[in-house]
Image (cartoon, rainbow, N blue to C red; front, side, top):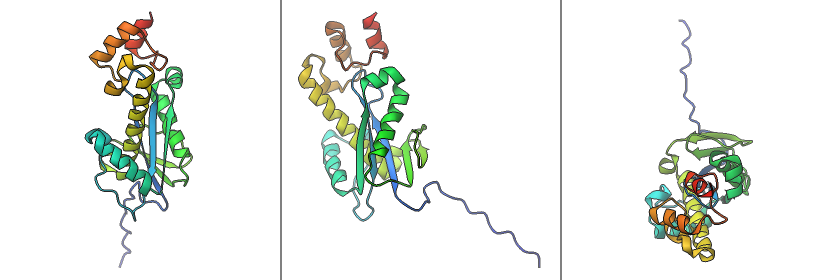
Length: 203
């Protein structure tokens, strides 16, 4: 009898031996402040209920999950790229830089990094981009929560220095109130000079 060919086996991108990290960012769209990235390696022995895309959670729930992730994850890291880096590199490259810093900041080196979106930072280990991964991959959801809460806290702190802009409310996004404050007071040191509404005021 002729030998039968062995069946082909599909290999999933996450079927690797070793630790898997999830990575996501917060703050690409605002007119001010750093872009922040989180990286998380979850501990499957310590499940965290309710992980989801940070944008779908209330601020109170994000804060609670932030503390739980920090307590239960095998390791996690939060990093950022500054406004100067955003204006020098552009927002995409600054975001990828923040993501790279977050991964490099992990206490345990992952074998695989799963990144939300469709672009990857430069990394030494295997990485895979997953569109809408913050809604489907728990480690990416956890990373999105760390990044979002960290950036929101930055906005609350910066509001104390420049309360006239209302960073505690709009978190740096180009709302009507924020744009009105920009026109009245001009840019502050943390406004992104290369973003159009700010650039137009500097002409």
